[in-house]
Length: 166
Image 1 (cartoon, rainbow, N blue to C red):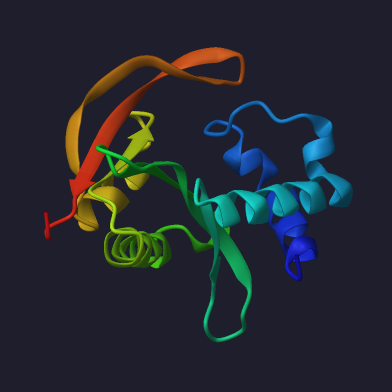
Image 2 (cartoon, rainbow, N blue to C red):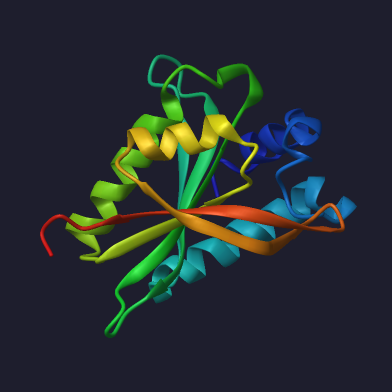
């Protein structure tokens, strides 16, 4: 909750940059009240073990430059989750997301003992696909009309990584 103002500033600053990739956001999304409620919900989900959210911070000045998370954590026989992330436009292409993905993959496999992680990326988002491949993810196929983004159903390239200990 200490980072709520930074989260709001991050979202507002990157609103247009993220628009082609984000689900449609209500105008309230870009308010402090919405972000406070969102962070509280994220804390509750982490406590339940269903979702885990992390900030991506620059080490030299502790600036929030992105976010990354594990969503829909499944236990039982599947032991999997979905990974998703976003990075500020001004910091794209500098390796921050690749490093963050590798750290979260390690957390998922060594701390949470998950078996498999999946990611879905729109096929034209080559930079994001490269991030995942550098972190060890492999392409599996296309999920047709998988996510509604800006009122349009978009295909997604599905990539995955399997826990090497399994």
